[in-house]
Length: 507
Image 1 (cartoon, rainbow, N blue to C red):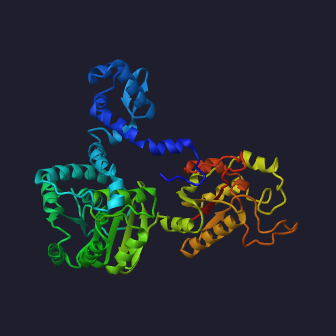
Image 2: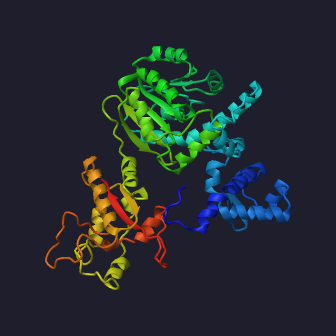
Image 3: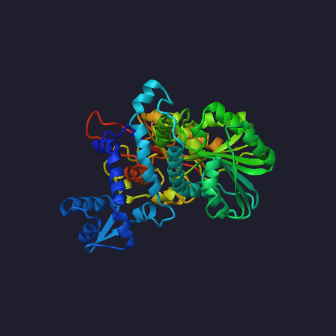
């Protein structure tokens, strides 16, 4: 999560500093058997405490907490697994993340030594491991990464659309082949090749393997081994995937791997780099430090750095696809750019670089016009009827709802004084969207129009700049911003943070 300039709440401070406690609660709920027992069937609190051999008083308080945070539900004196726990903590769930929870303490040991790395440099925590230790950690790592990949692979392939009916896909650093298995489920006429280290491939190949999936053992850092894979598939692959892989290597290593592996793609083939990016969100920035403490030279790259690596490998064009759980996919091509129908990442980045401190994509169907908002304009605002952008001249409720029906995507942006500067930035954002191919781009401002001190009685002096404010059309801006994770409250004190909310309708 990112702390916004307007967020000065102690609640946020507590959430940031106390996150480890919730991890311990989840871990203990699994270790004690609470989750497994409730997966078998509902129980009373007393039955659950007896079955887990907890003390009545202490265990009762623990169970009460599990109910309070939503890991379990309570109805008519009976306890049940919540939907969240059934999805991510149940043994039988296809999206279970139990091994992720099991592996996290291993990572925590490195995080506790962050200061060592900051003062001694990356790689300071790297040490030699015995073969047994290596294999044990590798298996634990693979199980955790496989569980995470089950969720993320669905996000990725649901977002990448309009692929050919048939083709060949190679996943470099495929692990257990989870991304390929999901892809081949959605595209059964394709052929898939999973490339990873021999130990990883040997372990992955012990399970059930689809007929159109095969494993190719290869150390991609060894040019001769990667060259053998390239020779077998030169200019014959339609989609090449690097998922959560580039962050393990240095720029020079990635440059070499991408250039060499890229030779396998057809002229119109897609090279997909799926990863966490430093400039995308706070998750990507945090993951960069995760690589700092856990690898010798890995890092989270920015989208610009990755685009430069791809350009150097012969893929000058790319588009960016945002995924729900904070990762991105850079889809690179040699010729025709891949058209992403859903991503607003480029516009978000432009908005943030242009002076807005928050930019959040949303479905325009979430925007509501309320009669009371227009009434507040009519009864209580000194500007009512005096400005061409305000009621009664502004768009009414029916007009706003009809307009919103023409759009499927929108971008909520938040800025700060001066108001005129904020409104100027909105027009720049609208123009950028229009020139970027979004012909229906239209912004709604925040606050009264400020292009002139007083409006002409007969007509607007600046019709090309005039845009309605959200509130003038009846939108509850407080509620809309809150639904996007932006806290907006009335100004009570002289030092309260002033923020303006605007909206870009995209298409």
